[in-house]
Length: 200
Image (cartoon, rainbow, N blue to C red):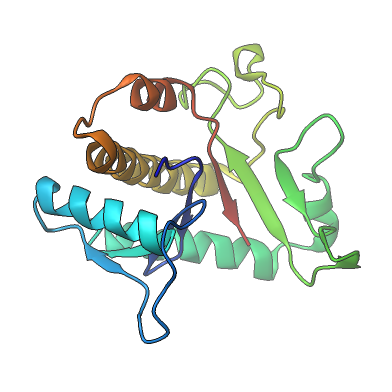
């Protein structure tokens, strides 16, 4: 079964990966697959292919993102959302021309969610060394906006580690699908992905 969509959700302790669709009905006694990334790539490719073709998602453990980096990311996010005045956050509000930044007005079933979030994406230039508002960073989604330099530094470190993990999982999915980790789709994803990391 082709994996048409890959969605990776990162929390501080878990990573859940989902692909669209299932090929077989689930047993009522079954539990969602938990995949230990310390296993060999051959084993992982088989486990991931099985998880995607049956459940459509899986959880990974031992993903190797540094726990201290995860804690640092959590700390700067908590500080931002708990201590920054709303008026200051609103200055970074997403707009019709810039989909990156703060928001607290998302709807679910036509009702406003009780949440605040901050969306940051890979820069248009794909070069985090450039200033966020550099013209080379322009893209369809707009420009990244960070509340502070220290927040930006930790956010980029965490984003980069999540991107590496995503790349590994995509390669393992490709290997499980057709026996090859490196194909045109993987090269295209690596070169052109437009990933976001949402804090909220």
